[in-house]
Each structure stands twice: as C-alpha cells, then as structure tokens.
Length: 426
Image (cartoon, rainbow, N blue to C red; front, side):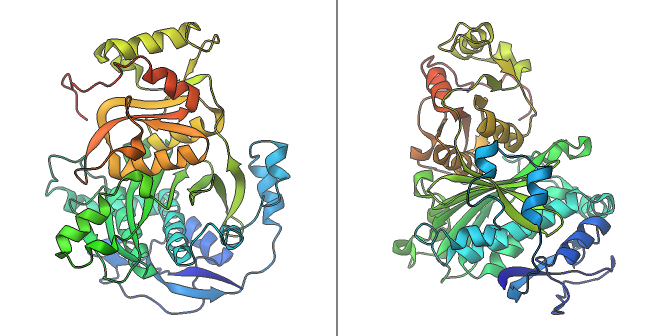
C-alpha cells in the first residue's frame, strides 16, 4: 500500500463549478487513471471558468507490482552504469523518501507528494492537444484585463499551472503561506501549517507553442514561528522573504521528452523520471554531482554587444580556449531556464542570465539550493545567491549557475552583471 494524493477527473467540459468526486476509481496514483488522463486530455473541472483538476486529500491506494524500473532503464538511460547499479535506482519517489528518514521531516512528505501530483497534472495538460486548446479558450478572456507592469504578462497555461499548484498545496494541509510568481502578493492559507512554499508554476511558457521544454520551480521553508502574532499580511511577507540558505527542500520539474523531477532535501540532489506505465516518479538520477568544470556555456549571445566588458572578455576567452580551461567551450541555449539548467547539472558548464531579470524568491533561490546540493555553485556574479536577503517578493537579479570552477572563473572577471537595460523587453 502507498499513500498518494488522489485526483478526481471529470469528463465534462462544461461543468459550471468545482465539484470533486470521491469515487475510489479515480486516483492519480492509479496507472490506468494517470494514462487515461494524459492521453485523453480530459482536464477536468471548471474553477472560475478555468478547467483544472481538484486534488483531494491523501488516500491509501493499492499498488500492483510492475517492472517499471526495467522499462525506465531501457527508455531513459541515466548517468551511466553507476547510476543504474545504484541501490535506489528505479525506486518510487515515495519509497525513496521513506528511506531518507534521518533527512526528510515526516510532515514534509504530504507537501512533496501533493507537489509531484500537481506536476504530473501540469504535464498531462501540456501533453494534450485538447487540453491546450481548451485552457487557452477558457483563460484568454481573463488575460485581456491586463497585469501588473512589474511582472511578465501571464500565458493561459501559466494561470492553469498556478491554480493546480495552489490547489495542491492547500489540500496538503501542511502549508501556512504560498507565494507564486503569477500572483502579486503571498497568500496566507492557515495558521497551523509548518511550511512555506514559493514557486514559479510554469517557467518558459512562452516557448510552449514551439514544443520547447518548460518547467516548474519550487522552494520550501519552515514557518517563522516568531512571526505568528503579527498581522497576516506582515507575517506572510516575512515568511516568504527568507534567505535561500534557510530552505529545507527545493525542486524543479522539466516537461520535455521525459518528465523529470529533481529534488533536494538538503543532503544531495536526486532526479526522478515519470514512468508513464505506472504513473510514478522513479529514481533515475541518484545523487547527481555536477562536474567541477564543464565545456558548455548557456546564454543569449544576441545580447553580446549590450554586455559589460568583463562578461564579454569571459565569453571571448572560453570560446577560444584561453580561459582557465584550455579547451574551447561550446554554446547551448534553449531560452528556458529549467531546461538550460537541467543540461548544465548533468553535463557541467555554466548557465546564465546576466540581466537584472530572474526572480530571487521563485527562481534563483530554489535552483541555487539544488545546484549547491549537487556540488555546483549559484551566484549573481558577485555574491552567493543563498546569502542574499530578499527585500521584495518579485525582486529580480542576474543569475549564474553551474560547475564550481566555471562560476568562480566568471566571478573573477568582476564586471559581469548587465544592470542597464538598453531598451528591449524583459
């Protein structure tokens, strides 16, 4: 028996309200339900005119034995034979967490399980033509009202993904406050939840029409009990604006040819690939270690002439093999932060955005925590990301992530932050 968040599905596309079904036949953990949902794109419920799934409380679900690990090894080779021979390779996410007793708090498990359930459903929406079409039609009207000038204009699937994650975290019962890149302010959920969750629901959403990989990013903190007696708005902000070094867990999901969930609980970074036959995330990349130095850099080279001198010199040198590494570097750039970082974590090198653009709370802190736990380094070009005290929920900054030696070499050039916007849109 396993414990999983259950997901109630509705085949109707015209349901006027969110009405969860308590039928025992609909569980996200059920491989038939998961596959059917992904294939049919029946996305399910209407909530404020947006069809999204409703994640019900945790339910005990019987799990049939499968050969998922064997299929995973054949279809998704991990980091070589060492990973495939690792004792945890092919374990389910739940089983893996269960064996990390000394490192994963018991109360954190429901939060992680609800987050991974939401990521599965986001993947189902993204992978379904009917799902993409329906959510676009349902959400476009709400987007015409406009958005805050300090934030990117949301896409239809940003809104759906945001609703999925908010619903999941609320259902967990363990989260007191959440903050999303899609919302102007943090949302206080309850006074008893021990955890704080910040997230970017769908990074890279502008690339969806071109089938370029997208992702979900999240970070988890403990609630600041010393702020419990403050007014709700005040304590919500204080809890969300914690330094990244106070995170107890972080993760990202990448939606691509495979659906991969990378997680850290503060004792290493591990990758889990969604096995479509069982509907479970299975360990595919145990204990990821970023190479000390890579040979790939990832940045938008079209902005080269807008960069400060130090950054131009750094790129010129590594391209020509004149840097600390005598080998010439290659450029790889997807323009999807999670995708570019995922490649960097696996192969080494450096992924960067030198502009004052990426959000400290929702992107830089969670990803830096993951990278550091995988033997890498996260910097704004001058400082360790996790040491920076946030002053605003949508605070932006430059971001450099990757192999320790590559990021340290870049920092030695000093003038690498592009703090002046020459006129193009963020």
